[in-house]
Image (cartoon, rainbow, N blue to C red; front, side, top):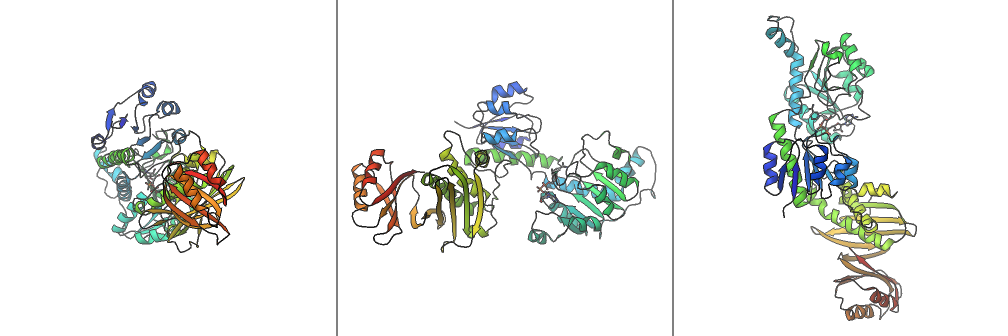
Length: 530
Ligand code: NAD
C-alpha cells in the first residue's frame, strides 16, 4: 500500500506531480484546525506553507506522521519541539529561492543607485520630466560590503563581481578557503562597514544579528553609504536608520523586509531616500516551482528511500559526503548498540572518538555521532521510538552528556571510530572501522584488539587462554542447535585472558548461556543482539 501525503496549502503543481509518481497525495486547502486533527491520523507526510498551524494537538493526532514538509523557509507555524519529540522530521526548502533573493538584491542595488522608483513615480504619477533631480551614481568600481556570505550572499557576490564591484564580506562562520574560492575578501565587521559604499545584509535574524546595524554601526559607515536589506526585518534598527538618513549620513536604503510587516506605520516610508518592496525576495515563478520541487523530492526520498537533505530538526548531510559517510553512520550505530549491551549500569556520558581520515575530512560528523546515540538509546528507551531526529533531544532529557573528539592514533586503520560509555560501573570502549567500501568491523573491545564482523546475534565472552575452553563452548552451542558462522579471538598469551566473539545465527536461550558460563576457563559471557 502506498504511503499517503496530505497537502494543505497551494504549491506548484509540479511538486504534486513528483509526489504522485510514488505516493498517494490528497490536497485539502483551508482546513479548520479540528478538521486537520480529524484527518491527519492516516497520513505519513504533511506538506504546508506558512498558513497551516501544525500545533501539538495536530501532532498528537498524527499517529502515522513521519515527515512535515514546509514549502518555503520559515517554520514558525510548526511546533518543532513536539515534532522532534515524536521523531517527525521537519524539512524546508531553503535553497529554492536563493537566486530569486539574490536577483532582488541586485534589482534594489540598481534601483537605489539610479533612483528608479522615484523617477518612475515622478513621470507617471506627477507627469514631470525631472532629469537633474534623479542624477544617479555608477556602481562599477564601488565597494560592496556583504554581511553574511551564505547561499544568497554568495550569489550576490558572484553577480556583483561581474558588475565590476570590489567585495568585502563579514561572516564569522565561513572559512577563508570558501571566501578565497569565491574571490571575496572576508574581513571584520568593522572593516566592512567602514569601507563599503553599499552594504547588503544576508544573515539570518538571530540574537547576534538583531540590530546589528544600529546607530553606532551606522555612524562608523562611510558618508553617503547605501544599505540594502533583503534578509530579515530587525537586523537594522529602523529608528536609527531613519535618523541617519535624515542627517545625511546614509544616502539611501532599499528594504524588502521590516521589523513589523506590513510596515504601514514606519516613518521610513515617508523618506524619498528609502525604496521598499513588500517582502518580494522569493516571489518569482521560478522560486515557487523550485520550492515545490524541493519539498516534493524530500518527501518522496524520505518516505521511499529514508534520507533527507534539509531537515530543520536533524543534522545535515552534504550529498557529496553521503557515499563516504554512510558506512560510518551504520558502523557508529552498531558500535553504540554493542557498547551499551556490554556496559551495563547507569549511563552518564557517551564519547565518540574519531581517528584517521574520518577525523580529517570536513564531512559533518554530527550525524555519525547521532547514529551511535541512536544505537545506545534504542537499547535503553523501552518502547520509545528513537530515530535520528529525536536521539539528541532524548539524550539531553536523560541527562546523558555527549562528547565528540578526535585522535591521531588509529592503530594503522585508515579511519577508526571509538564509542566510549561512562556508566556507574566504569568505562566501556568499543572501536570499529570500515574495510573496503562498506564492510564494518569491530577492531577493539575494551583492551582487546580483535577483528570481527557484526552480526545480528553475537556471543561475546572472556576466557583464560588454555586448551579445552573454546571447544566445549562450541559443543554446547552446537547441541542447542545454534550455528556459529564466525569465531574471532583477541588478546591474551597462553594462560592470559582472551576475548572471543562468536557470530551466531540464532539467539542463545538463558539456560544454554548459563551452561557456557560454567565451562572451565570462561570468565563471563554475554549474548548481544544488534
Ligand atoms: P544561509 O544560511 O545560507 O546564509 C546565512 C549566512 O549568514 C551564513 O553563512 C552564516 O554563517 C551567516 N551568519 C550567521 N550569523 C551571522 C552573524 N552574526 N554575522 C555575520 N554572518 C552571520 O541563508 P540564506 O539562504 O543565504 O538567507 C539569508 C537571509 O535571507 C536569511 O535571513 C533569510 O531568511 C533571508 N531570505 C529572505 C528572502 C526574502 O524574501 N527577502 C528570501 C530568502 C531568504
